[in-house]
Image (cartoon, rainbow, N blue to C red; front, side):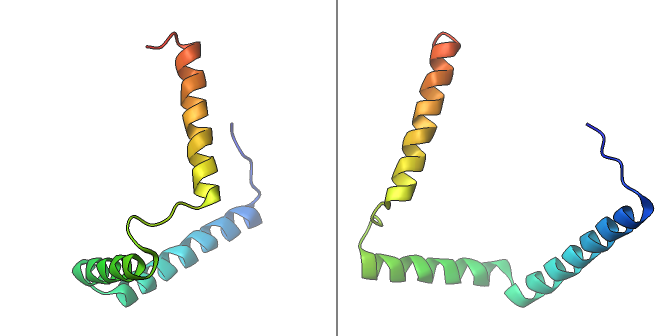
Length: 83
């Protein structure tokens, strides 16, 4: 499907991409080195485990999304003859 843009729409699109790229560069610089991010993530997991227990309790939304995904896969397998 081809989308047609006039000049102004194209310029807006390009400017939005540039702004997004600049924001991403700023966010990456602010985040620091990857090993720091990993260490922070591990601390958050440890905090969650200490406050909520391990494994984390499943919420109703995640449970329903998992059920919907399983149903979709089962339907696809049935349609393809359980290949």
